[in-house]
Amino acid sequence: MYGGGYIFSEPSDKDQKDHIDDPVKLQEFEARIDAGEKIEPHDWMPFEYRKQLIRLIEQHAHSEVIGALPEGTWITRAPGFKRKLVLIAKVQDEMGHAQLLYSAAETLGKSREAMINDLLSGKSKYSNVFNYPAKTWADVTVIGFLIDAAAIVNQVANAKGSYGPYCRALERICYEESFHLKQGHDAFIALAVGTKAQKDMLQDALNRWWRPIIHFFGPSDKASVHGEKLMRWKVKMASNDDMRNQFLDMYVPKILELGITIPDPNLKKNESTGRWEFSDPDWNEFKRVINGDGPCNAERLAVRKFAEESNRWVRNALLKQTMKQTIPYA
Amino acid sequence: MPNIESLDPRIRRIDLEKNPEHVVLNIMENWETYEVFHQRKRGEHHVHVGIVHAANPEMALVFAKEQYGRRLKCANMWVTQSSNIYSFHYDDEDMFETTPEKTYREAGGFKVRDKINKFKKENAPK
Ligand SMILES: [Fe+2]
Ligand SMILES: [Fe+2]
Image (cartoon, rainbow over the protein chains, first blue to last red):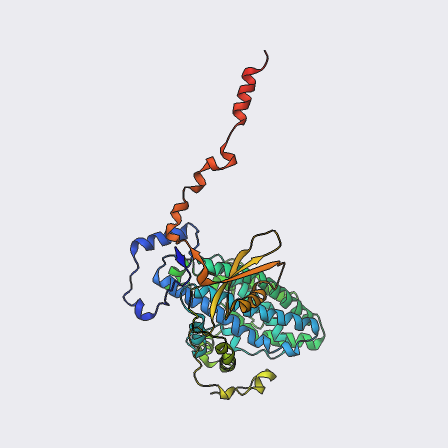
């Protein structure tokens, strides 16, 4: 029997070097996954499984926090009362998603404080798209419609993964995301069928966001051995290329039907392979931005640092010496 | 610190340059975790839905309402510190293995119709 207070510790690279998983337990673990059963926090799990899950879920959580910043910028200037209410609700949802995801990662043995520290220090990454600015209201509609749509493709896939707490968190998240997508589509359409100025503003926003959207799922990962193991363990449920292809299948027609164009003359579906073809999206830019050199990286982290630092006195005022760290059951 | 030209007027008003170079949270700064149980409507069970971080039970309830009660129906919520939860270990899951086989505990484990029909047939007036 276990009470709360069972503590795992986050695996470090140093531990990894000479770590070998118990082959019998590994076999049982893989058999469980093959049988379609979920893994729960107190279960034995391979070292690499725990490590990669923490990395994946933590980065997902950071993306929710940082992703709300470009949208949050527009809360004070949203056009009209309804759009403002909706945007506030969406931003609150994104913060809620972050908390759900941090909780899921905490069950694997990394504290929320440690995850936030790794975000602030730049050690841990978040989705690259949020290093670009939301210059106009049309950017908010492109984010709400297409970035959320892309996130849903990814989240729906991951919700079928093997780790119980992550699946449970994603189930609630996907439910809320369906509202994000719908309100984004609604706001996108409002501009697309509006005045010439509105239509131009939307086209300009899409032109700037198209490349980051193509970057969203990451570079092709078909060939990596690492990726194969993560797929075997149902940490990763689909390759980056497959998810991107699915996204293009679903959303390119929804953009084109509104008379909006996509700023890539080479974008087309190869009907014989079923795959979308597009111009080289410059993966060097992707790498450059993810490593800190994007238009908004510095601002995003500075804003988070400011928030943590200036609210710290409140957190500390409520802190009690008797508090103990426990691993949640989420 | 690079120059930051934010599009957000609220961010332009704060002095980000004053940020210390390294901001590091101490362990426990996000307090303790509470498990949250949500009751959809009166008459139903409270169901575990996840956790919140809070400094005390009152705060945990406020956060639980924000996190798990901002949509759909809710009649009531419980919170309790994660350290108050006791559970079996999944390694012992096999102790439940034979439970579904105990059909003598189930209504469906008793087949009477055939016997009744046989009895009736045998005793029917010729
Ligand atoms: Fe989200
Ligand atoms: Fe969203």
